[in-house]
Image 1: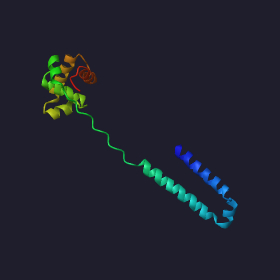
Image 2: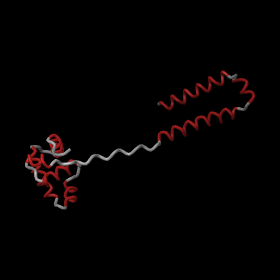
Image 3: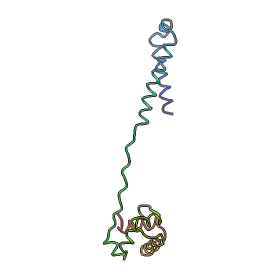
Length: 140
């Protein structure tokens, strides 16, 4: 929409400029192909400018900060180091299978640790566990 408005404005300015500098004089003196070429060059330059501006590479977003567990808070709540590690990996968004692969344990072991974390934190879902862990200062 903005581009169409810009092109329309440029076209209007061109028409106004030609009227102001005796349009009839130049029409008789130069053939119409020159005017068409001039307008084509102007719009080509504008197209290249806006094309380069729109396709400029964007800076890469910063990687998310790693979750840093607080062992003192975990001891207060009775969480083992492995349960704290499981909570941290849950906070990173990993599935039970991915957590098991990273820790070299079975998926059932991850589920057992997860359920113990959930019961100690008094939550039912993974998202609630992460929220509660942040509120309690277990993960930063």
